[in-house]
Image (cartoon, rainbow, N blue to C red; front, top):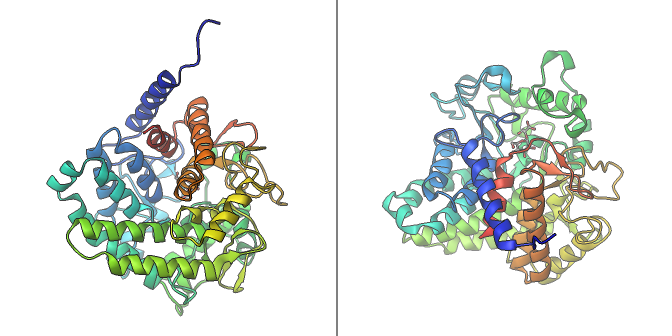
Length: 446
Ligand code: 9WN
């Protein structure tokens, strides 16, 4: 045909399509991850969304983060879901009547006026706030955006670094697979095996009304998610040891590399935010560097050539390779030999980036539990692609970063901004019109 491939035109139409997704998913003060599957506000989604939204509307990007933080608890935690009261209860499970934040979370300081979950998600927020500020510093200063966000972000990090230091080494621990964000990763199989699942008939999964069962976690997984969340709730969402119902001292406690790498990256961002506000950032920067050393000491596995999760109940590394263990590449302060090993692992047989896969798979291609369609057990996700792209760039791997960037853009556009894709074929899985896919594609267009 006479039509030549035109990258600028392709980029312009991708940008317009991504902006349309974010517009359609905007509810007035925040953006839903997906109109069908996830009709409320999610914590780490909002951070990724704000990072893309800043290119379309810096004001909406600031508002996205501000809305999330109005639901912050008095103990500093940022809940993983902020519920939209105008959405019917049966549209998403678990709904507000399961979490009962304003009553069960009273001692932990849950807000009275808004309903939330009681668990958390990865702390991408300070990084997002800094990037959003940089998109329009004049608007940000005139609205006092960073001045208002800073104390809230600082309290959030304090919660994670103190109340969630479940292993006693300084890293943050997660008490539920939903907290780490990669819900049914094979990394959780062994720690979850200890949990007695809630009876399947005691709850109704709303996700199966919208998603193909083969793309979603199993009923057995859900039984365990429900049990863990109900126990945490029944213990008043208390953290730390003791407590009859466990909670943070409960049966599931894991130190995860991506969660902690994002906390460290956000701590670096918080240092810059402090400096922008005329305060000193050096103590935070020193802390971020110290935490990087702890991350290496606790979670690096030289033989695997990547970071692994630490199961705090068994106090051992979990021998499963997940994309989570590659995300620390994002840290510029990582020792050189470790960064180099991560890049080799990314291109080696377990992830095969640029060879058998174009986008980084969520789990080991050679792992026993690998499944190219089932959620976080193999499919490639766009947020982890974006994080690894940043990491490659931070360590001077420009060609690999460019290839990954091109793959994110092409697959985002070709799949209608799918939630995740088959890592080999790029076939869309889960929802389409997914907000962080649109937002992060938009970010990589700039
Ligand atoms: C539970 C919203 C969220 C993402 C998670 C993803 C999925 C929820 C679910 O959707 O989790 O939080 O119901 O499956 O795993 O990373 O934040 O997009």
